[in-house]
Length: 160
Length: 473
Image 1: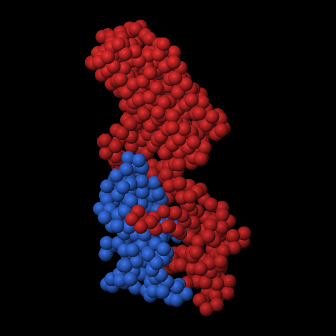
Image 2: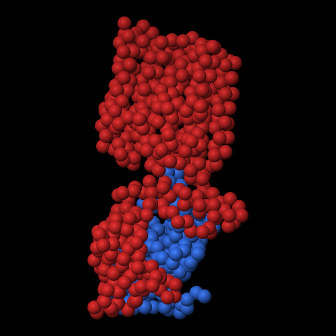
Image 3: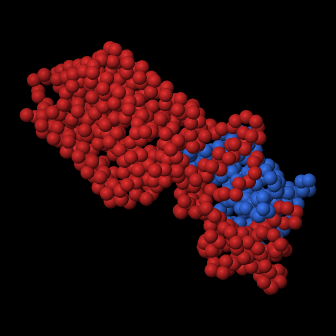
């Protein structure tokens, strides 16, 4: 089984925002900008219950992609990547289950810790589910230009 | 989880608007679902023709943009803020069908997306807090589905302390404590003071306000006002605990009942130990005003009488009630006159807090003064009432009814002017108005504390220098 290409892992570690694309009931791709949190094995994202339609889409169809396209969100790097994978929603504890990712989240968005302390002001924003994405295939554009074919890496056989 | 709902947290955009927004992004992301069922996304440089509802771009090399299934174009933007995170969040997606205009090869091919529907969010158009409030139904559906899936209720949570704070709106108790303690101090300056009954008065009056706060949420929910409000702030729009699913309507009704019962028990104790006809009348009228503030059939606040009810309740009634407990029913002009500026300033808290609620209130038939009148008239009303508060104070002092040290309250005039000046520029911006609402709450608090300080001076002066007269005339 191949591992995540190093530059893509770096992009995931650096990106302030990535585009999560899920498939809705009509077969349409629906794209949500979210913070990608990568632990070396999985890409995690979190979703407030307020904006939880994406979770319903994932429950119905686990196939998703995560794209890093905006040089502004990765400190000026121009390379780009799309990671296709299988997602599962972890919702055992919407109140606090997601907080295990807080250190990675805080590294990208330091203000989140301040806002979490003010939880009383916006309680539902902090009722969250985790989206755990197991990468299956990576498309990587080293120069960022999609007019050049991407390097494609299969990480494992696709889920049945 | 349950079925996917069709509605969205923000309205679907007109396709043309979607294209117009797409045209503002430096690059776009084309998305489709590949033959294996996975979404594919790739950055493209597109030429947008918003009137024609199309966007044309060179297809990504080595990938085939399908023409037999939905394809979308997305624009997304943030501005990084080092040490903080990011801001300026906005994104937009247009869905449609792709058509190959020549050949779909990178060498000479172009793909045109003909758009049909669009959706997005721009926090400069819909602030994050409003976006969150508009999304409450989605959160409710999520928890309902999770509960159904697990066969047991799953609800959002807050720590007990935070939930108590939020549910009861405890910080607003200053509206009660200021007039009650002022009434007690005025009575003490007249030589009447009993510590136990004074403490019971503060506690009992606080229970009345807590009952009012919670009952207000119950009746505003039942009558649709809190649900219709998508721009609540920490000062307005109620506690939202029912809307957020943190506490049920039934639990809130029970809590309001408990607070009123506790207030009633303390009232009966005070009547039994320090009773008077005046206290009985103030207690009964106070209860009616408190409950009738939002409860049918009176619904004072729904009829534009909320400010008068609040002024009466948190002005003369609280102050005179506390006074007559100490004096065992003896009345005096001094506590009544002292209550006038307090009453006006507390009514102005409600008055300003109703400004950001006015659209939701109007939808729910809550005809508050900011719903009824133009911004200019509302701001003029604020200035008139604030001015009247200071004039009443000065007249009280000049007439020899209030002691000279109460003029300390005039120190708050600059704060009142700051609130007044902040109303017009923030009138249509609920979140900008939050700072002004905070200062307006402080105005009442600081003015009240200065009045308390004034009576502390009167009491101390009376003890150490009985011959010094602190009243004019």
